[in-house]
Image (cartoon, rainbow, N blue to C red; front, side):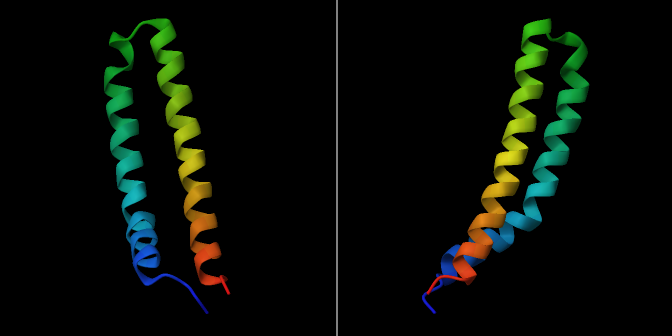
Length: 70
């Protein structure tokens, strides 16, 4: 098996720190939401949702890909 230990460690810690980053981002978005313009609200919510989905997919694929690499 040719899995990478540094990559696995980075993915491991990222899996545990990602929820804290996501929670702090959503809390700050909620606090600032009223002061933003309409197009900025749409853009910011879209970026947070897409970024969260992409990060979750990236972590899953990285975790599974690194452990199953041969």
